[in-house]
Image (tube, rainbow, N blue to C red):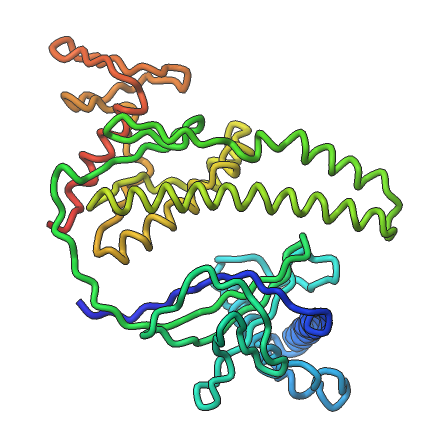
Length: 372
């Protein structure tokens, strides 16, 4: 089956001082244009009762320094604002907010002009519009069939620069015919990340929890420093680098685990859990955010898809924990403290670990949705 796909590659940028200054100008101009366009649209709506837009080019005559940066970065800001309004009108997001210098996220997006090939990779450098070659760490190669469509340059709170390259490609994915013994069910577990239908426990290392005391210490150090001082900025960078370290360790664990599962099984079945709702329930916020289950499902999804395999999601209201995996009897009274499932059916009397029982039920329920 021939399919067209879009994919993004993220690499670490290593700009020199001059290039860092240019990136800072781009971030500032994009932020400035966003606020100007948002203000115009807001005032236009108040006066006319409908949304009105204006192009960034209208401000270039008044603010000459806008010409110093990539014009496509400003044009993309207008498109992003329109998308933000559309998401608000569709009740998928809150009303767009004004941006500040103090925002942790700093980025801009530019597009590749195919005629001039304005974005391209040359050895260990990436060519970017209006700035030229910027050194970067290319830890993986783009495929020959993939065309660069756009890229986003961003600066993390730790001071590191990254480039996310969006590519378009055409591939012929051969669908794998699933084997029954290569179908796996996964039940989300707060303490062990997941328990599989084969009894495997992921044993997530809890990177954030282990680093929590260190993060608290660095956070207190910032609060003792004078606002605006150089020492406060140094302390902020230390904290940001530690958060980066925790995030990188988590992503490394999730990537390796999802790759192993995608290579080992033809079909993986999980529950379609809303992680945001779970994080707000029963004070589970830190534990849910720590293990990154939602990101893990994303990794599994695209890795299985690339291999012609399947990821199936079972409805979140399916009573996987309360159902007996042997006879199908539903046990209505089952509290979170009950870690062993004991079937109420006299003829069955199954006694099994609660999470293993749930993962077997998830596998059984998802089997009906497999494209054999």
